[in-house]
Length: 242
Image (cartoon, rainbow, N blue to C red; front, side, top):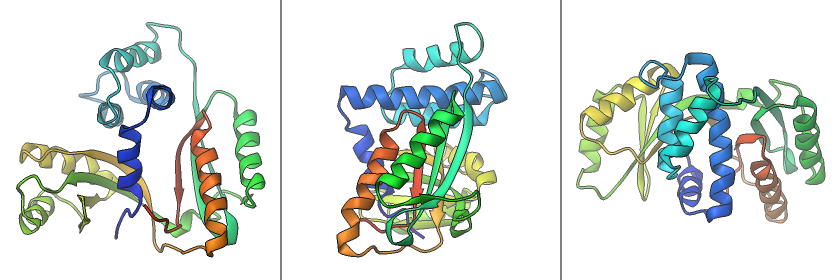
């Protein structure tokens, strides 16, 4: 099991320019708003909010932005209500794509997402049409080269309750069930492990390789989806070069 391109994507997110950072901060602000509405403004009692704050700090989102988003959602400032939407469909050559969005206008978002799929030779499908090709997992990234051997990291992760661990060039990818995600991350931190990033992810059961002449089109579709203000995450089963 491997996240393949995921760590490269995370690294790139941390290196974005100011304009790109502003867009990322806005997206995370929406996630914070939804988490606060569901579980309250205290990250100590709201594990979803705690996870999103960790994600925000991983891309250097200022504390003022984080706190302002929490205050907005808890009613201290004017708030916008966002609804979560999931879209499933196909990219070129039958590739599988899942889009997760937070929106204040479902019709606008559905239209935008459908247009992007159509523009790049894909098609939206019904809910469930491709999600069976993915497993929902917690993924925790720990950078290698921190003085911990591969064997020691494997033992620490398994002792912490991890389901599996993959050793990549730059990182250890530690996998958990969604239910065990918070516990494993807390246990790793108690073992003085520095976590580079963590998230609940959709992991393909198998990756596919596109014909060479289809790769650029597929990548453009993913780029357009990720650039949409309402789209939070895009998952797919295509093996792309880093």
